[in-house]
Amino acid sequence: MKSDRLLSILLLLQTRGRVPAAELAERLEVSARTIYRDIDSLSAAGVPVYAERGRHGGIALLPGFRTDVTGLTADESRALFVLAAQSAHSALGLEKALSSALRKVMAALPAPHRPAAELTSRRILVDPDRWLAGTRRGDAVPRPVDLDVLHTAVFADRRLRIRYRHSGESEQRTYTVDPYGLVAKAGTWYLVADRRGRPQLFRADRVAAATVTDAPVRRRDGVELADAWDVLRREVERRPEGVRVRARVRRGRLDMFTRISGASLARVLPDAGADADAHGAGDGAGAGAWAPDPYPALYPFGALGVGGDRSVQR
DNA sequence: ACCTCATTTCCATACCGAGT
DNA sequence: ACTCGGTATGGAAATGAGGT
Image (cartoon, rainbow, N blue to C red; front, side, top):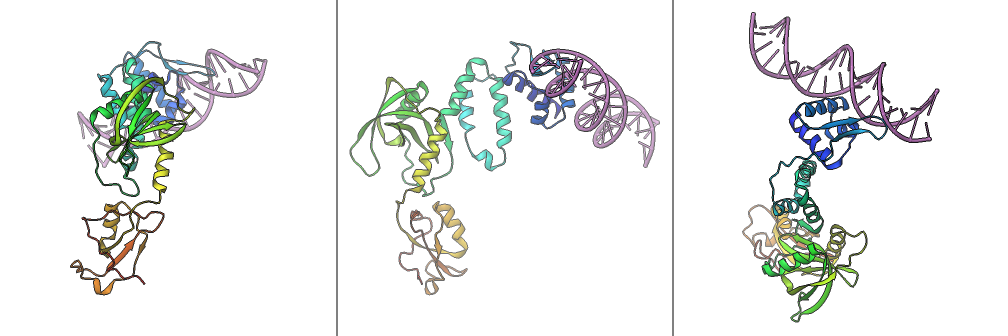
């Protein structure tokens, strides 16, 4: 425990410069007295750490002192910061641990690697959750060359010219866009970019061709990938499109049904009675369910079967 | 000179393992 | 079971540096 804390202190000091003992104590959940003892231990171990008294004082490392405990290459460190964007950590209650781990990695990275790792965390997002409407079709993987070009434009801060095929259209359109970054949403890559100053989402596997231009990117002030993504994600999930479906599902399987379909059940119909055996149900009544506007999309076909109009609606 | 804030010193408590 | 030594931790007062 103590050795872990000593390492945390060391890396915090590397990252932040001078830090008051009270702040270290708060962050590491011990008393300031314990922090001072840890500083003594670090000092005894040969770490050039010193305390500065008075107003604006604090604990600091001698200028120029750094540890490099990772041995990571530039690409390896960038890969770590892509992983770090996953919300799964918060779902597991590991958000704090992740933040602490990243702080350690960032602090321990060789100085030349740090800007790239930091940039990666701002230009790449991984959102493992499926769209509310449950997009399942295709799951097409973009040709590597497409993603490479998009990737290059994002990190080189250049405008991008793309030929893009919209959903349901056969012809391609050409756009010049200002990329914020790439987002992996449920395994599908998207380019988040401004087109004529407005944020737009482009599925990477619908980008037929892409060219990185010489023109520098024109991003809106103060807008980061996460902000633009948040706006676009909400827009997509508000869209009232999709397929209206009425399905028969065993009552005991409703929970699994909504989980698999990725949709929220709008209404459970009264017991379908005579149709109860339609799927060989032995455990009770059938239930009709469909999703009304504004979320009418369900894609449960195949997995559970669809009863068509056999459900009874009162 | 006085005040504020950060560090240091002193002392007490808790816990653990080894020895009796 | 008890004692002892070592380690870790926290509270409170003292000390010191810098700002006004």
